[in-house]
Amino acid sequence: MQNPVFGALCATLLGLAAGPALSHATLEKSEAAAGAAYRAVIRIGHGCDGQTTHTLRVELPEGFYNAKPMPKPGWTLETVKGAYARPFDNHGTQMTEGTREVVWSGGALQDDWYDEFVIRGTVGADVAPGTVLYFPTVQECAEGKADWTDVSGSKEVPNPAPGLTVTAGKADHGHGHGHSHGHGHGPDAQAAAAGGPVVLGDLALSGGFSRATPPGAPVAGGFLTIANGGDEDRLVAAHADFAGRTEIHEMAMEGEVMRMRELPDGLAIPAGATVELKPGGYHLMFMELKQPLVEGETVNVTLSFEKAGEVSLPLAVGPRNAGAQKGGGHGGH
Image (cartoon, rainbow, N blue to C red):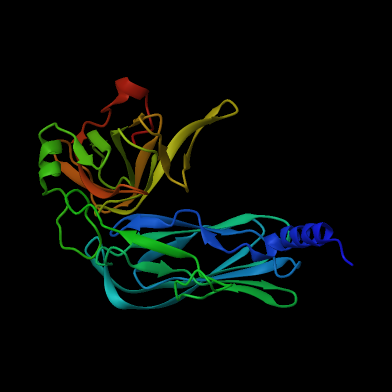
């Protein structure tokens, strides 16, 4: 007769051994506000029944717009474009199509390894709170696949798709996509123009300025102070109508040389901390300028935070050396 204790122990050990194979593909953060920027971090904890994963496919849900995947060393990145069911208002530009599927291939994620795959985008402002946006995910291996594509929402299915629950947006402060709010015309923007801070949830943004540029200059810098009275957040994107693109940069020493570089993951705003974007340090970089920045005028930039959402901030255009006494020169940016 089999020893019941021995049998129970074997069952436990077998269950533990099978544990990794039952690990689902999941999102690092399972909630995001309507109208907010969202960084979808898809966590993969194993291969296909002991095999190495060489391809990962992620289908993007309707309601998740302006998606930009992050390249991974050793993997080939492809995107599949398609039409949106509803047009998406991207800062005044109607977008009718965009990335609908992301494929990483040619990699080698072994069965006992863990990895993350990142896609940054925006949750539509018109997505109702409580809606779950699913990211069906398929791992492909040499023989077979592991699919996480069930979008029923049931906790009993063996292959649930990673799901993002949409929460209410901060309509009083942010400028979510899909709405017709003008930038720089709300009460917070007026307060900033009068010298007061712009408040977005637990964040207070103040001291926004830029520098005048000569005709034909291709770039300019943007500077401000962000005080965080709540949990950690992250500045993940910025947009300005007067520039072809806007990036988040830092100045950092590489050996004995000070170099400027983009922060592809954005800028962390620690809990309870104040982060200053200033000449010679962290800053916004406005690239492919469409017009010169003129001293005495005011321009607007839209900032996207991972948790707090979006807000428009006016920047006072000062002289070409504005802020130099605070952080040193920065090549005119």
